[in-house]
Amino acid sequence: MANKKLFAISVADTGTGMSAEKQKHIFCLLMQEPGAGQLVINDCETSLTLKLAYEYVKLLGGELHVQSQEGLGTTFT
Image 1 (tube, helix red, strand yellow):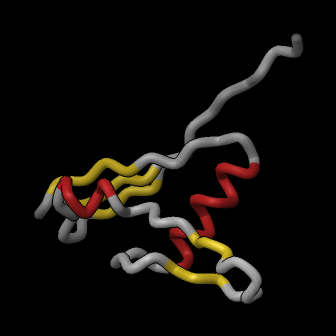
Image 2 (image 1 turned 90 degrees about the horizontal axis):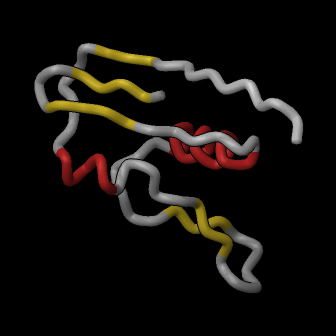
């Protein structure tokens, strides 16, 4: 088995942060509607860019995590 090299990249801000409840749903996934050929975005308050980043990281075998506290900002790793 080949040695795997792991690394982490974090992006942080000092914005408003988000509640623990919102963090649970931050990575709402894009879903393919059966037979329609259209993408359906789950009803959530996440940007399309974040959803695509999450899917891309998963495709590459990685993980995307969020840490946030209201009033203190958010870090994505």
